[in-house]
Length: 57
Image (tube, rainbow, N blue to C red):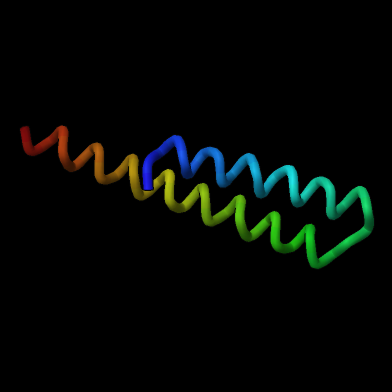
């Protein structure tokens, strides 16, 4: 997954989380939070991979 896709997943999750909060839909809010956190983890993994690639060249 690219950093851009990971960032998009974070944004999508945040929107879903906010919408769930606004509609008092705890399930949607939780799904959004989980998606946002997954995106953050994926972005961190991509950054770490980039760092390793740069340090080996």
